[in-house]
Length: 197
Length: 86
Image (cartoon, rainbow over all chains, first blue to last red; front, side):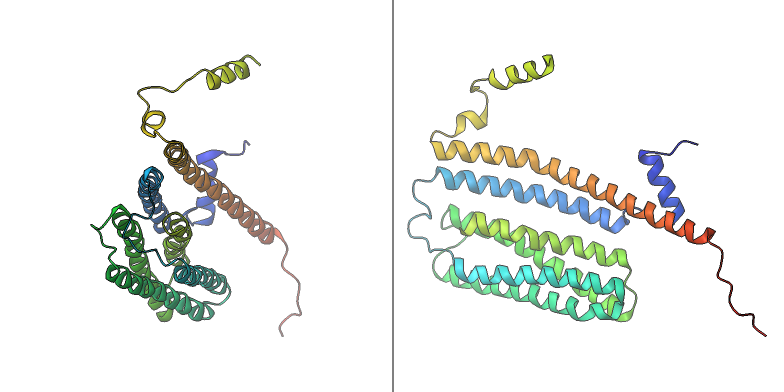
C-alpha cells in the first residue's frame, strides 16, 4: 500500500483526527494578517523613499518624535505579547490558569494604546499634524493604522477573555486571537525602527 | 553547468533600464538605495509569508501524524491485568 502524499496525506490525517489541520478561524485570520502586512509594507516603502529623498529630515519646524518614551511603550507591548504566549501555555495545561496572564496582556495592550493617544495629543500641541508636513502625514497614517489594529485586536482579546471566564473558549478561538495580537505586537518594533529612529 | 552559466550571464547582462522606476526614479544615492531596498522587501515579503505558512502546515501535519501513530500503538497494546473485582 502506498503512503499518501500532499493533499491526500492532509486528508488522511484530518479524517483520522476528526480535527482540521488549520482551524477555519486561524486560516481566515492568517489571510487577513497577510493582506494587512502587504498594506503596511507599501506604507513603509513610501515613507522610506520620501525620507531618503528629503534634503532635511525631519522637515523644518517639525517636532522631534519621542524616541525614549516610545521605547518604554514598545517594551510594554512586547511584554503583552509574551504574556499572551504564557496564557496559551497555561491554557493547554489548565484553562483557569490562563485567566491572569491573559488579563495582564490585555491591560498592557490597553496601556500601549492610551500611551499612544497621550503622545499624539502632545505632538499635535507641538505642531505635528496630518497636514503640517510629509512626516506628519506618514506618522499619523502609519502609526494611526497600527493603533486602529491594536484597538480592534484588544476587543478580540476582551471577547476571548470573557469566553474563557465563562468556560466556553475553544483552543482554536484562542489561536485566532493570538495570530491577530502577535501581528500587532510583531509589527510595532518594525514601525518604531522605520518611523521613529 | 550550462544552466549556471546562463544564470550568471543573465544576472550580469542587464544594465539600468530607462523604463524601470526603481533604476530611474532616485537621482541621489540614498534615494536609489531606498528604492532598491523597498523593492526587495516588497518582493520577498509575500514569498516569506507563504513559505512560512507552508512550513508551519508541514510541521503541524507531522505533529498530528505522530499523535495519531501514538494513539494507534496505545490502542493495540493489551490492557494491564489488574486484581479481579469480587
